[in-house]
Image 1 (cartoon, rainbow, N blue to C red):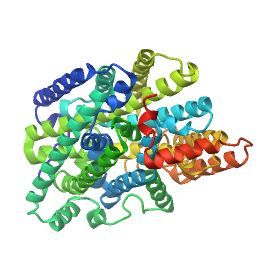
Image 2 (cartoon, rainbow, N blue to C red):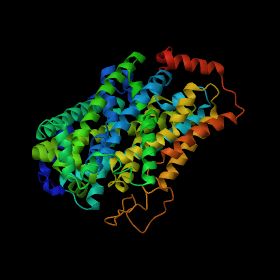
Image 3 (spheres, rainbow, N blue to C red):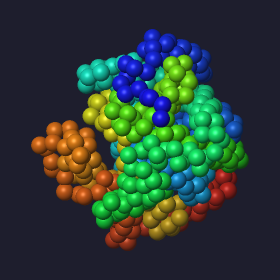
Image 4 (cartoon, rainbow, N blue to C red):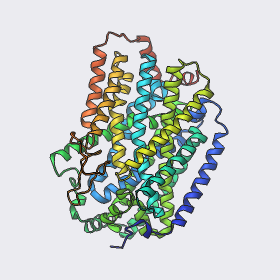
Length: 545
């Protein structure tokens, strides 16, 4: 097996790596500045002026969805735990199909800028918008944790940064750069960065996939055999159960993870918000076609990249590098093409993180400014300029919180961290969205119980799970939790992912809240929402009032 780098300082030239980084940053900042010239209205800032075609938006959706979890996290998971790691790819792809079939176009036809526009369409505006905005902020925070952790590990690996202080500094720099993109470019600039990033990511992954298969004689079976031979797990790498089949608890954790992945996307605000950037429901459907095609192809690439990293780099060396499992793809690039390919692939990964983080930040800031400030605090009487100004201030605050969270989560696998965001989204947002769209009797109490109940249960279970404290590596005795002090252990929930408990709670509370309330919904409003969501009739008029 070829020798791989074990430390960040052994994998090429930090000067070349930073040069490639800077070239990318300069080019994309130029694009963002150019796009920002047309940011005159709230629709320009939040929805890119609804000026993107279905193909452009489909590529941008793929860019938004193919996050650091897809590229860095899944490749690392497959390289270290094999078959069980590939389940992330399967879950993310199937989740996308569920989102498209159940909610994507319906939300686009009914809403204006945010998910709360739909949830409050026929319910009481103030409390429902507030709850939806709080949920959006919580989901965005957990998703941001994953991206910031990936960014920190990646930059540390490339620049030869060792020590906790240096890693924390790089996470802060990435966070500041992300804030600049959002403040300057809004949704229009962010969308163009996502389009560029999606193209670069898929081309880069395709190049590495072909290269790995070439090293294996264009024989995928031979690649699997070589990966198993190079792994300490042996042939168990190719079989279910290496990560999620050892005990009854891990088997339950696998079911919980699967539920969160499959149902979570349909409740992710930053993905759903992308459908507001197209001018019509027809273009929204075209977006779907392009997104499914690109996302499906990419997840096939992750299978080759993950097992390729297990073969050519080795799980031990991956886990010894800064960022641990998240370093598998960059280390594989170095093995294949040396310093130059490493720099290019790392720049693509950095673009991936930057674009997704910018999309998350603008979604969270738009939710606060549009839902809480404009519609709850100001009761709809607010100038567009003031609303956008509040959104920009919120973006700065969210960026600062993401930096702090990323510092704590920097050694966690980013695919795993994203799964936590999916669990929160599936618990708090998805029940309310489905009830709003399809249940005529659904009312304000049901929405509030569903959002707050699902959100609270998911977050409480995460806080008191082994993810935060108490998970110890049986071999080394080191902490595998966010709190690295092995003497601190306050977990009582045994599973890493709370989805198997919190998702049913969200649906149950939405039902109980509705049937115990005396509030009678407007039949006219429900009929209007049903017609608009299914046909798109009146949607274009609604988004401009």
